Image (cartoon, rainbow over all chains, first blue to last red; front, side):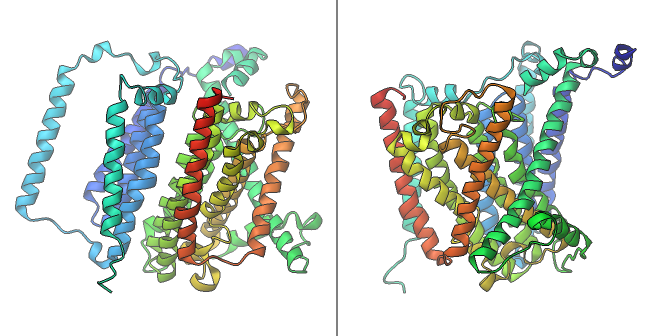
Amino acid sequence: MTPSLASLIPDLTPVLPGLVFWVLAGLSVVSAVAAAMAPKIVHAAFGLMAAFFGVAGLYALLGADFLSLTQVVVYVGGILVLLVFGVLLTGRAKAQLGLEKPVRVGGAVAAGTALLLGLLLAIGKSDLSRSPWLSDLPEPQGTTHAIGRALLDPEQYLLPFELVSVFLLAALVGAAYLVRRRRDAS
Amino acid sequence: MKELLDRLVEGSSLLQAVPRGLVYTTGILLACSGVLLLVSLFAGEIVWMERRISGRMQARIGPNRVGPQGLLQFLADGVKLLAKEDVIPSSADRGVFVIAPYIVFAGVFAAFAAVPLGAGLVPADLPFGLFYVLAITSVEVVGVIMAGWASNSKWSILGTMREVAQVISYEMPLAISALTVAVLAGTLNLTDIVAQQSGWVWNWWVFRSPATFVGFFLFFTAALAALKRAPFDLPEAESELVAGFHTEYTGFRFAIFFLAEYAGMFLFALLTAILFCGGWHLGVPVDLTSGLARAAGFLVLFLKACAFLFVMIWVRWSLPRYRVDKVMYLCYKVLLPWSVVALVVAALQVLLTGGR
């Protein structure tokens, strides 16, 4: 009696990752479009936040847990906050966006089309039939350890990692220099 | 979580007929709803705790009428807030104004998904749990910006600016001081970090290394600032800014901000207990594997969190507010350098002693 009742429930197990994928992909695309089309710059920033989240979710779905969290902490918690902070300081009335000059619009359209074509070419060239389906992937084991080891391994990414660190430090010192209190100016 | 559900399925013939994916999905949804309910109710009780303790400190009684000792006061307050008019200022940006409280709420409550409340009592036992919690709480700031900007009010904007500057600054010492434990423990999994602290009280991370001892105080101080609790409550400074970013909010939306704030306190009290003070371990070597002992462990963790909550409340009602530039000074010139020193000491300890 009971098994027959329970067997009426459709088995959604293989469909679930796909379902989650479409929800996250939809979120990313819709909010990215909203970010591009929003008349107010702050709305565009909030749309961008939702897009970042969708992409972070996609990373997590693919088992790239460290990347996904870094996406949230760097883009949502850092860059986006600073961006909106800047917009807040510039005031509300001026934050309205109009249509740019035709030259710029043309340039943007050209750049966008070029990017789209490049991506389409890349997708067409890659052999998708060889990559495994989402539901066939092994359970993610956490990538943090592997990434940490690769970054600090002299034979792998130690040099680029240190170079980026020095570069960021230089940027920080430069920023501190630009905003320093000038004694003679006051 | 998955092992728990697997064991549940094996024990029941009814569940075995149900597709496994459905069992997992339902189980996880149920676990998350349970945590949500528990945390929401307890956040209400923290409000009551705060009001009673502050009453005590000011030689008055505080709320003691609704329920025994006033324990159900938060339900009465909740009903009151629900019944109030939901005012949206005419010059506010409606859409953003309406969404903002939910983003703040989600930012805090999403973190609880990875916080273990006892051995095995965790909706998602992530291998990178600590990183997840610290990352997802940074979403709250975005909700605060949305609220402050959409309100279109001077108080809100000023409060938002202060809050954003403060919270993103204090995230750094907070994360770095938590890292001292992660470096010594060799894992970011919160359950494993607690498991390493079993046995006597000196096995707790706070007593195991000078780095984590300093890290403990740095973490707690930075958590106070990240939570905008006094003496770092400048973003909400009642005497200058009315209520900061949520000045224009009323009724239920205000209640959500309030709930998120107190749930945030609970989150960081739990994290302090889990990272530094043994989690659900009592500090004496007892076996914690049986069912009853697990429940007792949950209670132990809860009481530890309550102790930290008491300290947070105690500090708020005894110390005056800091000046805004002093708050930033404390972050960048005191907490940040010291937490980096603690991290370097922790790393050296790992290098010299090979881990433990």
